[in-house]
Image (cartoon, rainbow, N blue to C red; front, side, top):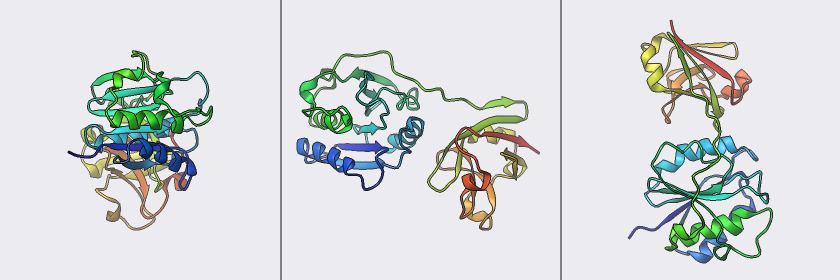
Length: 263
Protein backbone atom coordinates (compact mmCIF):
# COMPACT_ATOMS: atom_id res chain seq x y z
CA UNK A 1 0.00 0.00 0.00
CA UNK A 2 1.37 3.43 -0.94
CA UNK A 3 2.10 5.94 1.79
CA UNK A 4 -0.16 8.99 2.16
CA UNK A 5 1.17 12.42 1.27
CA UNK A 6 0.61 15.78 2.94
CA UNK A 7 1.91 18.93 1.25
CA UNK A 8 2.63 22.31 2.80
CA UNK A 9 2.33 25.73 1.15
CA UNK A 10 2.98 28.75 3.37
CA UNK A 11 4.32 32.28 3.48
CA UNK A 12 6.61 31.45 6.41
CA UNK A 13 9.87 31.73 4.47
CA UNK A 14 12.69 29.21 4.15
CA UNK A 15 14.27 28.15 7.42
CA UNK A 16 11.26 29.22 9.48
CA UNK A 17 10.74 27.21 12.68
CA UNK A 18 6.99 27.45 12.02
CA UNK A 19 7.34 24.93 9.19
CA UNK A 20 9.16 22.51 11.47
CA UNK A 21 6.48 22.93 14.14
CA UNK A 22 3.76 21.93 11.70
CA UNK A 23 5.75 18.93 10.53
CA UNK A 24 6.35 17.88 14.11
CA UNK A 25 2.62 17.93 14.87
CA UNK A 26 1.83 15.92 11.73
CA UNK A 27 4.53 13.31 12.40
CA UNK A 28 3.48 12.95 16.04
CA UNK A 29 0.06 11.80 14.86
CA UNK A 30 1.04 10.03 11.65
CA UNK A 31 4.76 9.10 11.70
CA UNK A 32 4.60 7.17 8.41
CA UNK A 33 3.30 10.12 6.38
CA UNK A 34 5.28 11.65 3.50
CA UNK A 35 5.48 15.45 3.86
CA UNK A 36 6.27 17.50 0.75
CA UNK A 37 7.04 21.23 0.78
CA UNK A 38 5.41 22.89 -2.24
CA UNK A 39 6.60 26.36 -1.28
CA UNK A 40 7.29 28.47 1.78
CA UNK A 41 8.30 31.45 -0.33
CA UNK A 42 4.84 32.91 -0.91
CA UNK A 43 5.05 36.66 -0.37
CA UNK A 44 3.70 37.50 3.11
CA UNK A 45 -0.13 37.46 3.16
CA UNK A 46 -0.27 37.15 -0.65
CA UNK A 47 -3.35 34.95 -0.98
CA UNK A 48 -3.50 35.36 -4.75
CA UNK A 49 0.08 34.14 -5.26
CA UNK A 50 -0.57 31.16 -3.00
CA UNK A 51 -3.69 30.29 -5.02
CA UNK A 52 -1.66 30.26 -8.24
CA UNK A 53 1.07 28.09 -6.72
CA UNK A 54 -1.45 25.57 -5.42
CA UNK A 55 -3.25 25.42 -8.74
CA UNK A 56 -0.01 24.77 -10.60
CA UNK A 57 1.37 22.10 -8.28
CA UNK A 58 -1.46 20.27 -6.55
CA UNK A 59 -2.73 18.33 -9.54
CA UNK A 60 0.67 16.64 -10.02
CA UNK A 61 0.34 14.69 -6.75
CA UNK A 62 -1.00 11.16 -6.22
CA UNK A 63 -4.67 10.57 -5.53
CA UNK A 64 -5.44 10.96 -1.84
CA UNK A 65 -2.90 13.72 -1.21
CA UNK A 66 -3.88 16.28 1.43
CA UNK A 67 -2.70 19.83 0.74
CA UNK A 68 -2.36 22.31 3.61
CA UNK A 69 -2.09 25.99 2.74
CA UNK A 70 -1.25 28.52 5.45
CA UNK A 71 -1.37 31.98 3.92
CA UNK A 72 -3.73 33.43 6.43
CA UNK A 73 -3.93 37.20 6.97
CA UNK A 74 -7.15 36.70 8.96
CA UNK A 75 -5.78 34.16 11.43
CA UNK A 76 -7.54 34.40 14.79
CA UNK A 77 -10.57 36.22 13.39
CA UNK A 78 -13.97 34.80 12.47
CA UNK A 79 -12.72 33.62 9.07
CA UNK A 80 -13.34 29.92 8.61
CA UNK A 81 -10.96 27.04 8.00
CA UNK A 82 -12.25 24.57 5.43
CA UNK A 83 -11.66 21.07 4.14
CA UNK A 84 -12.34 20.83 0.40
CA UNK A 85 -12.12 17.71 -1.73
CA UNK A 86 -11.75 18.19 -5.49
CA UNK A 87 -11.65 14.92 -7.40
CA UNK A 88 -9.20 12.85 -5.33
CA UNK A 89 -7.18 15.76 -3.97
CA UNK A 90 -8.02 17.28 -0.59
CA UNK A 91 -7.24 20.77 0.69
CA UNK A 92 -7.19 22.31 4.16
CA UNK A 93 -6.90 26.08 4.18
CA UNK A 94 -8.41 29.32 5.45
CA UNK A 95 -11.56 30.28 3.58
CA UNK A 96 -10.05 33.45 2.14
CA UNK A 97 -10.03 32.69 -1.58
CA UNK A 98 -6.78 30.73 -1.60
CA UNK A 99 -8.63 27.73 -3.05
CA UNK A 100 -10.59 29.74 -5.63
CA UNK A 101 -8.17 29.12 -8.49
CA UNK A 102 -8.65 25.38 -8.02
CA UNK A 103 -12.44 25.48 -8.12
CA UNK A 104 -13.85 24.29 -11.40
CA UNK A 105 -10.68 22.40 -12.26
CA UNK A 106 -12.00 19.25 -10.63
CA UNK A 107 -15.27 17.85 -9.36
CA UNK A 108 -16.22 19.33 -5.99
CA UNK A 109 -16.88 16.27 -3.85
CA UNK A 110 -17.28 18.03 -0.50
CA UNK A 111 -16.60 21.25 1.35
CA UNK A 112 -16.64 21.29 5.15
CA UNK A 113 -15.97 23.86 7.85
CA UNK A 114 -13.54 22.65 10.53
CA UNK A 115 -15.38 22.88 13.84
CA UNK A 116 -14.63 19.63 15.70
CA UNK A 117 -12.22 20.91 18.32
CA UNK A 118 -11.48 17.44 19.70
CA UNK A 119 -9.42 16.90 16.52
CA UNK A 120 -7.29 20.00 17.10
CA UNK A 121 -4.11 20.52 19.09
CA UNK A 122 -4.66 22.32 22.40
CA UNK A 123 -4.26 24.98 23.54
CA UNK A 124 -5.01 26.66 20.21
CA UNK A 125 -2.94 29.75 19.51
CA UNK A 126 -4.79 32.76 18.12
CA UNK A 127 -1.95 33.32 15.67
CA UNK A 128 -0.93 29.82 14.53
CA UNK A 129 -3.91 27.84 13.29
CA UNK A 130 -1.65 26.10 10.79
CA UNK A 131 0.04 24.24 13.63
CA UNK A 132 -2.89 23.83 16.00
CA UNK A 133 -5.82 23.17 13.65
CA UNK A 134 -4.79 22.44 10.05
CA UNK A 135 -1.81 20.19 10.73
CA UNK A 136 -3.48 17.85 13.25
CA UNK A 137 -6.68 17.63 11.18
CA UNK A 138 -4.72 16.72 8.05
CA UNK A 139 -2.77 14.07 9.96
CA UNK A 140 -5.94 12.57 11.41
CA UNK A 141 -7.60 12.40 7.99
CA UNK A 142 -4.46 10.69 6.68
CA UNK A 143 -4.79 8.07 9.42
CA UNK A 144 -8.42 7.34 8.58
CA UNK A 145 -10.57 10.00 10.23
CA UNK A 146 -13.71 10.29 8.06
CA UNK A 147 -13.80 13.80 6.58
CA UNK A 148 -17.54 14.14 7.22
CA UNK A 149 -16.77 14.23 10.94
CA UNK A 150 -14.58 17.32 10.65
CA UNK A 151 -17.52 19.71 10.74
CA UNK A 152 -20.62 20.85 8.84
CA UNK A 153 -20.87 21.04 5.09
CA UNK A 154 -20.88 24.40 3.34
CA UNK A 155 -21.94 25.47 -0.14
CA UNK A 156 -20.32 28.87 0.15
CA UNK A 157 -16.59 29.48 -0.26
CA UNK A 158 -14.77 32.80 -0.68
CA UNK A 159 -13.84 33.29 -4.32
CA UNK A 160 -11.28 35.71 -5.74
CA UNK A 161 -11.80 37.40 -9.08
CA UNK A 162 -9.60 35.89 -11.81
CA UNK A 163 -9.83 38.06 -14.93
CA UNK A 164 -9.98 36.16 -18.20
CA UNK A 165 -8.17 37.36 -21.34
CA UNK A 166 -10.33 39.23 -23.82
CA UNK A 167 -10.16 38.44 -27.52
CA UNK A 168 -10.82 41.42 -29.80
CA UNK A 169 -10.56 40.34 -33.40
CA UNK A 170 -6.86 39.68 -34.07
CA UNK A 171 -5.75 40.86 -30.62
CA UNK A 172 -5.79 39.36 -27.12
CA UNK A 173 -5.83 41.58 -24.06
CA UNK A 174 -4.57 39.88 -20.92
CA UNK A 175 -2.44 40.55 -17.89
CA UNK A 176 0.49 39.29 -15.87
CA UNK A 177 -0.77 36.73 -13.36
CA UNK A 178 2.41 36.34 -11.36
CA UNK A 179 6.18 36.66 -11.37
CA UNK A 180 8.02 33.38 -10.83
CA UNK A 181 11.27 32.87 -8.93
CA UNK A 182 13.31 33.55 -12.09
CA UNK A 183 11.62 36.87 -12.70
CA UNK A 184 9.58 35.50 -15.61
CA UNK A 185 6.23 37.19 -16.20
CA UNK A 186 3.49 34.55 -16.36
CA UNK A 187 0.34 35.81 -18.09
CA UNK A 188 -3.26 34.62 -18.06
CA UNK A 189 -3.16 34.00 -21.83
CA UNK A 190 -3.23 30.31 -22.72
CA UNK A 191 -1.39 28.69 -25.60
CA UNK A 192 -4.67 27.87 -27.32
CA UNK A 193 -5.52 31.54 -27.73
CA UNK A 194 -2.03 32.35 -28.98
CA UNK A 195 -2.12 29.48 -31.49
CA UNK A 196 -5.33 30.83 -33.02
CA UNK A 197 -3.66 34.10 -33.97
CA UNK A 198 -1.10 32.61 -36.33
CA UNK A 199 2.35 31.05 -36.48
CA UNK A 200 4.82 31.65 -33.68
CA UNK A 201 6.99 33.85 -35.91
CA UNK A 202 4.12 36.28 -36.56
CA UNK A 203 3.06 36.81 -32.93
CA UNK A 204 3.72 40.20 -31.32
CA UNK A 205 3.61 40.62 -27.53
CA UNK A 206 3.46 44.08 -25.94
CA UNK A 207 3.85 44.95 -22.25
CA UNK A 208 4.92 48.12 -20.43
CA UNK A 209 6.14 49.80 -23.61
CA UNK A 210 8.20 46.80 -24.72
CA UNK A 211 7.46 44.78 -27.85
CA UNK A 212 8.51 41.16 -28.42
CA UNK A 213 8.26 39.81 -31.95
CA UNK A 214 7.85 36.08 -32.27
CA UNK A 215 7.31 33.30 -29.73
CA UNK A 216 10.30 31.02 -29.13
CA UNK A 217 10.19 27.38 -28.08
CA UNK A 218 12.54 27.76 -25.12
CA UNK A 219 14.87 30.23 -23.44
CA UNK A 220 18.10 28.93 -24.99
CA UNK A 221 16.99 29.77 -28.51
CA UNK A 222 18.04 33.37 -27.95
CA UNK A 223 21.21 35.03 -26.64
CA UNK A 224 21.62 35.92 -22.94
CA UNK A 225 19.94 39.21 -22.10
CA UNK A 226 17.30 38.90 -24.84
CA UNK A 227 13.68 39.60 -23.93
CA UNK A 228 11.60 36.68 -25.24
CA UNK A 229 8.04 35.39 -25.25
CA UNK A 230 7.28 31.68 -24.98
CA UNK A 231 4.70 29.19 -23.79
CA UNK A 232 5.82 27.98 -20.36
CA UNK A 233 5.39 24.60 -18.71
CA UNK A 234 1.96 25.57 -17.36
CA UNK A 235 0.67 26.20 -20.90
CA UNK A 236 0.53 29.98 -20.42
CA UNK A 237 2.26 32.72 -22.36
CA UNK A 238 5.19 34.19 -20.46
CA UNK A 239 7.84 36.83 -20.99
CA UNK A 240 11.40 36.22 -19.88
CA UNK A 241 14.89 37.63 -20.17
CA UNK A 242 17.34 34.90 -21.12
CA UNK A 243 19.56 34.39 -18.05
CA UNK A 244 18.03 37.55 -16.63
CA UNK A 245 15.00 38.96 -14.77
CA UNK A 246 12.07 40.14 -16.90
CA UNK A 247 10.14 41.76 -14.05
CA UNK A 248 13.09 43.98 -13.22
CA UNK A 249 13.84 44.76 -16.88
CA UNK A 250 10.25 45.78 -17.65
CA UNK A 251 9.58 47.16 -14.14
CA UNK A 252 6.21 45.43 -13.92
CA UNK A 253 4.44 43.15 -11.49
CA UNK A 254 1.26 41.07 -11.33
CA UNK A 255 -1.67 42.88 -12.93
CA UNK A 256 0.33 44.58 -15.72
CA UNK A 257 -1.50 44.70 -19.05
CA UNK A 258 -0.35 42.43 -21.89
CA UNK A 259 -1.50 42.57 -25.53
CA UNK A 260 -0.87 39.85 -28.08
CA UNK A 261 -1.44 40.34 -31.80
CA UNK A 262 -0.43 38.92 -35.15
CA UNK A 263 1.81 40.97 -37.45
